[in-house]
Structures are given as C-alpha cells and as structure tokens.
Image 1: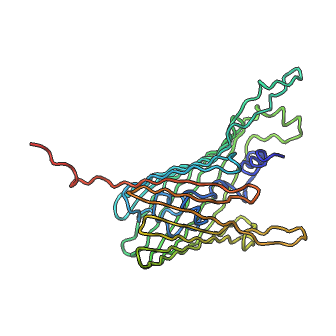
Image 2: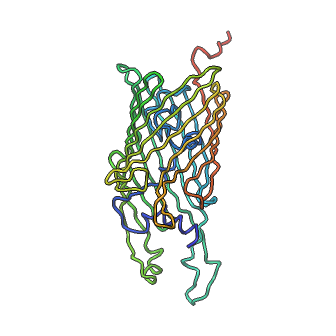
Length: 364
C-alpha cells in the first residue's frame, strides 16, 4: 500500500465506514495552527494573546495588543501530499471584548480516479482517468470578553462548522462548540479549553451511483450515509513569564489534553480518559527576536523484543517581529521518522484602528 493511499485511509476514514464515536474524529483540527504555536509543541493555550486564539483558546482574544490582526499559514505534510492552510482575522471591539474568524483547510489534491479506467469492452483507457480532491474544512467564529469585576479573568466561545468531502463521491457537514477561560495572576496565567463541548456531530451522505458497481464487484459494503461524533476534550494549561535584565524574557508553558474517547497511545493512557501533555518554552529579546522549543506527542512504541519504549517529538522555531509584522518558522515532525520533518512558516500582520482624533483637519 503506497503512502498516498495510507494517508487517505487514515484521514478520511469516516467516508469508508459507518461510524459513531470516532476516536480520532476531525483529526485535522488536532494539528495546530501558527508556526509560533507549533514551535512550542502546541503548549500555548494559556499564553497566546493574538488572532490564533480563535482556534487555541478564545479567552485570550481580549488581550490582543492591536485592534486588528490577520494571520496566515501554509504547511505540507507527508512529503507534500497533504496541504494544510490556515487564515484568520481578529478584531478588538473595545478593551473588554474581541472576536475572530478562523478558516482551516487540510486536503489531498489531484488524486487519480481509476473507477472508469476500464471501458465497457474491457479495455484499459488511461484517458478515462480523472482526478479529484479530498479535503476537510473548518470555519470558526469566536467571541470573548473579560470580566471587569474579576481582574485578569476572561472567557470566550467558538462556533465551529465542519465541511468534509471526497470529490463527487461524498460530503459531510458538522457543527460544534469550543469554550475557553483564562486567568492572569501577575506573571502566571491559567487556562482551560473545552473542545467539542457539546460533541461535534458530522453527518455524511454519499453519491453511491459513482461507486456502487465497483464496490459491489469487489465485495465492499455500499452505504448511503454515516455519522461521526467527536466527543469533548479538556485542555488544562499554565504558563509563566520570567523577566530578565537587558530586555530579555522567558515564557514557559505546560498543557495537558484530557481526551474522553477511550484509551489512547499517549503518556498516560487510560480509559475512558487519557492524558496527553506537552511543554514549550520561548526566549524573547525586546519583543523583536524569539527562539522557541517544545516537546510533545508522547507515544509508546514496541521494540523488536516485544517491549515498549516511550518516544516524543521535539520542535524548534524562530520568530521575528517588527512594525506590526510577525514572521515565524518552525521545524517539526507531525508523525514519525518515516514521514520526515516539516518546515512551517506563518505570517501575522497587526493594525490599529484610525482614531477620530488622528483624522486630518478639514481645510477651510
């Protein structure tokens, strides 16, 4: 089985069978967005205060330093087969509230469709081979605000709309909610994010006429619809800033993801709740240059003798910020040594709204 087919089976499994609670439902949303976040191994739910909070923890949005932020990221996984794109915009309404819109696409394009490779006379005709795309989309609308009576406390929510399709063979729509809270206490920040809080349910329908004959001939079951359910996941996080001399600063954070879909191969596997921690650190100079590192994705792998070894995937990254433009880079591994390393770049642009007092005076 080649790599392209293996990836399709893993990522788009809900299209291939009837499913209810799927352990890795909407797995494309677990990858993460922003090279800064990936450089800290996704340990950012407590410390982020920018446009990407719409994805990580909406409660951080009111603390944006600028009125408007726009973010972009393009990444390729599995030797360039899977394309991952993110775009977002956030607006600070006032000192107490902010909102954001986030768009994510993860897809495999130009997949050969060989269902009609053989014509009615039994002849192989490569001109009959067409291509299609299999992609997952997420549209997120977030809102968050602070609580004036409790200094440093904020909360927010994100409405998620999921759209998934495999060419003209099938598609599905899903809806869900994320909720987040955040509390800042001097140099400490504590956060909690409940993803898929009410469970995210995606209903799929299939154009069975496109593959019925081939599936029947090869002994595969033909289904017209299925349902996938992503159950809640709680992320608890804490971060701390250390202010150093000469305009240097260090940020550290630890996040623990608590999944509720059964036993997983993570650092603390259990059922029904498993615990998957990650940690990151960021070294900053004068809000200008950043060096980042992290470790996460702990797994137990079997060795040739039948034992188990604990493994983890490290990440490293760099960042540069000047005049409201932030460029970040990360070198990360999203699978294992077979998949190889990925180079991730992201861009963020900050704007301030033009105040009325800044407007030029009218000429007489």
